[in-house]
Length: 100
Image (cartoon, rainbow, N blue to C red):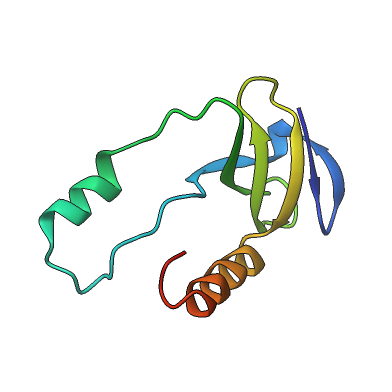
């Protein structure tokens, strides 16, 4: 599997470290809502198809990336810096009045 790093170009999977699901929203760190934290830590969706994931280019530039990968074929269809993907998500959140 190849991941195309925006800085370094196409690289083999062995240069990257999986960092987790890119679809989940972390609860407010000051929150004491135990159900929200339990859901964040333990609940997982087993997606069949395109899925957003966070990867780090640990064997290269060390950038954190938002990768869209098909879980059935492992084809990578999009790669962006995780920091930019996060900004777009919060912009959508603000523009829609709070519902992302």
